[in-house]
View (cartoon, rainbow, N blue to C red):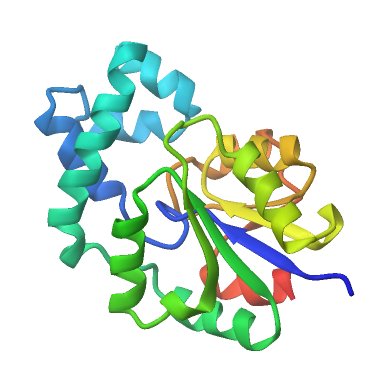
Length: 204
């Protein structure tokens, strides 16, 4: 029997983590003032790295450091309003839910446990590479024996749309996260959501 699989990104999709990212970036001496922060929303992650002049070799180090910073900040990181109800609704409707994220698994689980929805997710995968999400997406579809047309990846960045396309699955971009609506539209997702409350109808 075909399985309906919905895989979520975490940062900027389920959880409002952007303010913590900006705090961290400023603490690392990166140029993230108010105007620069808004400019970043119109850039892909590759362009963000270039604009902030982050050497490629330094990315894994900064990613690991951010995970530690996020762990301490997590008590004040909220899930987006309405997300808990959406996740429970999708689970109750028989959807198989998973997460593929560049945040750490423990950080993700801490927030999901706090808000009582950890048990809604069958798989949580932490991908160390910022550009390596297509591989775990394909692996999860194989593991769950899901057909590409029955699988969605939901994310807030251009790289999420690109990863879904590379994995052969459908993409749903959300406008309340990191990338702006204009940039997301230009990446041609299969669908675009403007409020968390829209996810249930779009994915059901």
